[in-house]
Length: 308
Image (cartoon, rainbow, N blue to C red; front, side, top):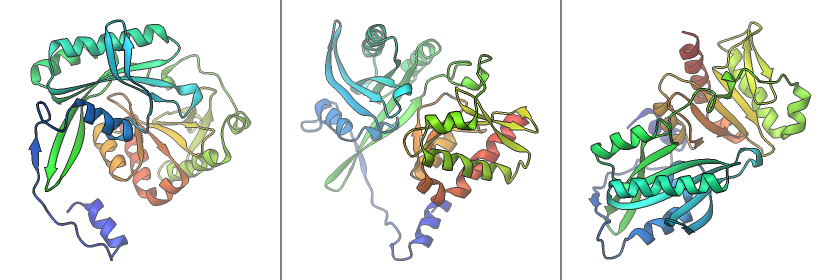
């Protein structure tokens, strides 16, 4: 049992230790009951399965010039930060035609709605090495995510497990706005007018965690984000986006982003899509109360990585 599981059981002594039960992987392609429509229904019912955050379903089987887009998911919790995900589901192995269709559907949506951020998402049972390399080449120029889906049968139940095998490449100046030389100074009052009191309280508590290992740290207010200044010099190993909703969006740069994304998900935090060198997630007051040590470790790791 890992440390996280042990801690949960210690906090809840009445909960029995989970028991091992053997499951078996089943193939969905050609299955008489669990077909592609069934998979799309499961994703539509709970979009968080894909590990992209809590998305809203904007459309299913969306008609386009080149065919039908399986799912159009929208991250529109923040009106000024809308992102659309063009999702294609394939049972069995990836193939060239499916990769091309995924990119074509993405291309049509981003041409029709250029004022939105767009990301192509390919979901398949098996992302083979050959086509993983192909997708990786596309990923240098096109925001595309590859997700491998496995169906596991445990007694009379079937569960779906989705693993990100390729995330979008983080591009300087696109994913990390702290590198933008045109950032505009702002004030505390500006952000208080642009966000909720609850979000600002979480921001202040995060500053308190940062001061535990960097006493000279201070918030550095910009119109694009709230960064950090260490001893009066910008040092954005973590930066923040206060929101109208009662949460704070955090963008951190730890040494092992993928490992940290998994740790945050396991802790129940809402992890957002990000590039290969950073971690983005939403933090609410109740999340911080439960995971104060974990968030502090993330901040410290980011500080050590960013300033080494």
